[in-house]
Length: 306
Image (tube, rainbow, N blue to C red):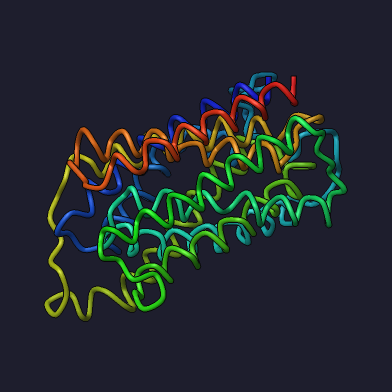
């Protein structure tokens, strides 16, 4: 079941990336990110209220917002501190990632983001003792080779990887995102998925409000102006659904973060299709073969994880 949820999450992430790209076109980055956290918090407000009141409206279901997955007696503050740390990690990755995505083609950003599984894989093996079988390793190697080829073909779009600061922004987002994946595996051993997702959106909203007040609002007339886009609420809808599938998958006892992380990076396939159909990006022929290798890699990972 966790494997299917990982694939669902990957598909939703691809549409989420396309929604971000559309919302950020000629738009101020930080207000878009703030609104994303606001809408996400609104989506999960019933579960936040349930967690606060302890009414147990969703008790016994996958929507249960009780803090601990089991019958643990740890303090509530402990659970909230863990989620606050997650919020800070994720928001850091998002800020760098949003700025990079605004200034780069989505067919370049996708492959860079797809390098996260390499970092997660190393971390999962070192920290959690996860081991892959030969079929899974075949899938990993094929996916990594295809992503390397994608990064090489992107040079035809006149993007200098060594001197473009937006490339470094996306790279930082990918590294911090990998840290987030490993941290998720750690906290999901004890926390319930709905509690984590509900409250980390809320804490992100608080953090982003502070960032807006300190960094953007005083300088708003000197930067790109903000304008409303209907793609903004779509960002929240798709990331909320993607994260719910992801955290539910991680919460299952036999799940492997190294495999889930790699499958989620398969979202590059969906974002690539959106780059073709919606954003009309260039240099697509060279990237089609590379994406085919990613698909084959996903198949091997699925076969090795059955």
